[in-house]
Length: 278
Image (cartoon, rainbow, N blue to C red; front, side, top):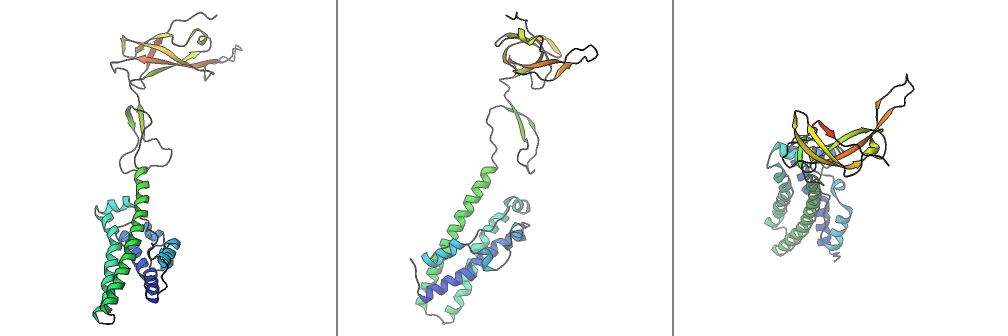
């Protein structure tokens, strides 16, 4: 509710021009002290009210009796490198400044410049306004940090085993960079490049026999699950005799290996019976 009483109006102006800037400056100064220059680069390391005030929060303070300032941007990762308690101290800096300002504001009351009843009233009103402002700021900070925390969780769309890790803990990651290579070891397949002169004799679900390099005595069964629709690179080229390039088609063969002997990237030999083309 809009309260145009002179005392309340003055208290709101004091909160806007003094309490809010000092509160946010305390956050920024503490973060900068622990090595995080994010507030300084954002121009928040100042007592200038115009830098810290939020338009909507300032209007609501005057109209409804509660409001908020702009949250100070910080980098929790930089703070954690400096000290495990740095983030907590940065968060407590604002409320600590509120307490310090409250102590200073009590001096006129102790000197008898303001009656006890007025002192209690103003103290209660200021505490309510400060608490509402701190609540709004905390809610905004929670939303921001929840969003940042969600970005630190890496999920995979498939189940499998990590066979390659490109980065270590603490390294920065840019969008599009591969972090892990995940392979489903229960669904391995063999890629065979079949010449165009032979691909016509291969059909889907056709059985195949796989031999692993270095263990030719072991036989693994498989079946054709995919045949390429278009030709790829040439395996032979004979321009002197006028022969055309011999292209190949990618053929994918599902492997039945419950033993786990076959591994991604292994070289194998494949046997398939050539079928008649009708």
